[in-house]
Amino acid sequence: MTEDELESLTYRQQQKLWREKQLYVEAWLCEYFEFIRVRNHSTSPRTQLGKLVAVQQIAHYLYRHQVSRKGDYRLIPLLMTLGDEISKVVALKKRWEVTKTYVANQEHKWPEAVAGETALTTLQRAVVEPLRLECRPRRKNGVFRKPFVIATSHQQYLKWAFVSDLPPRRQKAYRTTRIALSCPLARPAKVPPDGCYFPLPPPEEREKNHDGTLADNYLYKTYLYKGTVYLQGIWILELTNFKTDATYGVYSMMIPDRHFEDGSTFYEHLDHYLCGWWLPEGYKNLHVYDWWDTQLKGRRGRWVTKGRAEFEPKDSCEAPHRQQSPIWRYGYLFPVPNTGLPANGCSFGASFERTSYQILGKRITPHMLRYVWATWAFQVGLSDQELRSLAYAMGHSVETLRKMYERSTPEEKLRPIYEAIDRHLFQQLEAPPEKVTSKPNVLMLVEDLRLLSPEERQQIFKLMEGP
Image (cartoon, rainbow, N blue to C red; front, side, top):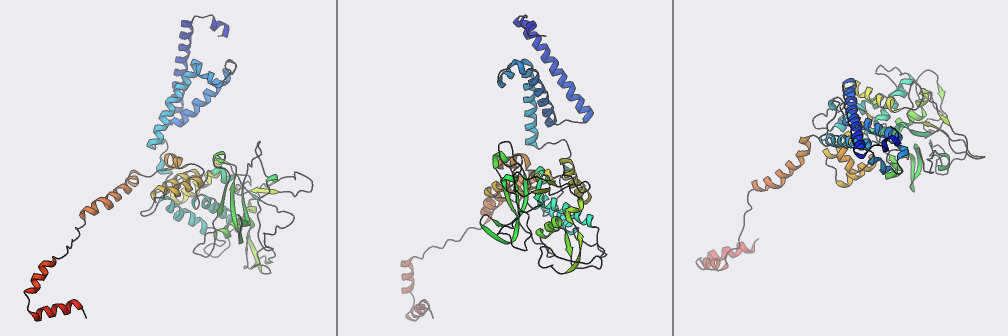
C-alpha cells in the first residue's frame, strides 16, 4: 500500500492492517527459524540473534524515508514486532551465557587435564613442549630434516607459544602481526654493530586509520626500551589494531626469553624462524658464515633452513611517502606455508585444530585458549590485582573474564569455600583447649613453708637460687 492509501483508512482499519502484517512477520520468523533448525541443525540463540539483526537492518533500509531520527523506527509496528522478538532472543542468549550452555559438545574442544594439573598446564606439557622439540634440525636417526619442514615446525611452535605461554589476545592480532624487513639507512646508536635488528617503523611510515591513529600490529626487536638498555636485545609485541583498542589503547608487551632444559631459549627459536638457522657442522655445501652472529663468523657450516623465507612469503613493499625517505618493507609474521599469503581466520584457526587433534584428539582453537587462561586464573586463585592484570593483557575487563570466559566446574568453584570452612571453623572446634595456668596463692605458700623444718626450707631456697 502507498502512504496515501494507508492514510485513507480509519484508525481501526490501520490497526487491523498492521496487526495482520505483524502476525505475518511472526509466522514468517517462526518458519524461518524452523527451517534453519531442520536444515542447519542450528538451535543457538546467538545464531537467531544474528539473523534477526540482519532482518532489522533490512527493515531500517526499507523505512529509511519515513523517519527523521533513529528513535522513530520504534514507532513503526512491524519494527516493534522485530524488537520484541530480538528482546526474547537476547534474554535466552543471556540465560545460555549464565548456565554455560552451548550447542557444540565442549568436551570435543576442551583439553582433559591430567590429575594435579590445570587444562593450561596440560596443554603446555602435552602440546607446546613436543612442538618445540620438533623444531630440532635432525631426525632421531641423525639425518637432517628438510628445510621447509623445519620452518613449518618453528612456525607451529611459535603460534602455540604466543597463545599458551602468554595471555592470549584474539587470533586476529597474531595473524595480522607484521615484522619489518628493512632497516634505516643509518644504524641507530642503540643497536650494537653485531646486533640483529628488526625495527619498529616510524609512525609516519605505518598504516593509519582515517583519524590518524595507528592501525597495524608489529613484532620488533630493540635494544633500548623505556629507558632501559638491553645488551642482547628484546622482542616487543605492539598491537594497535584489535577489537578493544578504543577502550584499552595501544598494547605493548615485552616477550620474555624463556630458557628450556636443553639449553635453548625462546629467542633462539624466534631467530631461527625469522632469520634462518646456520649450523657449523655437516659435510655438504660447506660455506663460511659472514653475518651478524659473532660466535659463528668465519666458521664453516650450512643453512639447515631459511626460516619463514622457505614459504616464499608475498611480502609487501611500501613506496616512500616523501623524497629521500627509505623504503620500508614489511611482511606478516605467520604467512600460510603453502601459499605465502597472510593467514585468514579459517586457516589460522584450522592449523591449531589439526595439531591439537593429532596430539590430544581435541579440536582446540586460539579462541578456546582464552577460555583456558581465564579458567586457569580462577583455578589457581589469582588475586584481584592479578586478575585485573590478566584481563588487561587479554584485552577486556575482569567482568568479561568472569562472565564469558571462565569455565571452572562446580566442584572447582565450591572447593575454596569448603576449604575455608574446614580451616577456619571446624579445625578451631576440634583443637584441644589450651591449658590455663593460674598464679599461685602467696599466703598459702607462706603457710606451707612454716610447716617445713629449717633444713627443708634451706633446700628450697637453694633450688630457687639455681646453680
